Length: 321
Image 1 (cartoon, rainbow, N blue to C red):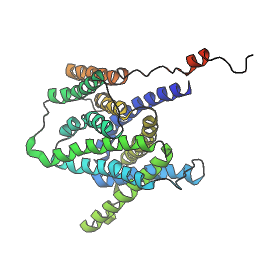
Image 2 (tube, rainbow, N blue to C red):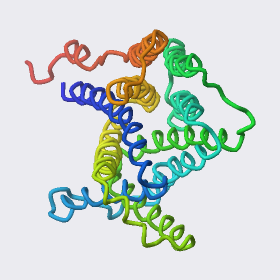
Image 3 (cartoon, rainbow, N blue to C red):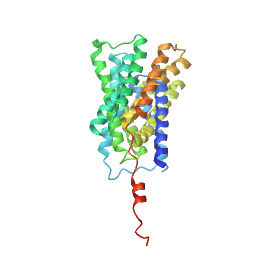
């Protein structure tokens, strides 16, 4: 019963994460009006690290790293947030955001392949078809908007595709580490590493450009502060904590397909807050995505019913005379 409750909670968190990530595109657009990509990442992870440091400092959250393979968490952090966001930032300098959206939708497929290799996760034919259906739903929306992949932007396209590999690698390794570390232990190290590395890169860039005095300028904007807090605390910290929990309960391939729900949320957010138009193809694509997510999680192999209880009923009690 407790295990079933944990799995249900994992699915609730997966939907919540998709909603949070969907709104993160809106807040990222707002933040980039006041700051560059690397500075935005620095303040984003500063917020997440500082907020989580409070309960750690007061002892409300216990972290126990002694005797645990910390190098594996460092490897995890190189994939996400370091690899993912670095590749994304520089990839989008050479490619369009639409191309980024199309390529990111392939994350569940890459995750399914990597999880099959390293975690021996098996998926049924219907699950595979469902995952591809969710990907097609995202690609369909972008194509109908007139977007496509320009092969002349190969450097950007390659880096954006590698973001899929980075996130898939993170999902697979995080599922493995969930048996040795708590969600808080993994998340705190990831936020700390992200903050330190992005802060160092940002300060080096400002020093080289002679603009170090402008480093804190974005904080004068309330819009930027709110955006950075959302991106850091909600979009980074909360989703990392919940993702680690989700991966301790369900397979990486099942969790990853939920990322495509973020496309639906971003469409709704754009319509509500930016006045963007919602068309028939948005609705069709959204239905395909939802159908794919449901199929990937409903069409798995049925687990064999435990035979212990029935065997116990057949076995005579040794104490009966």
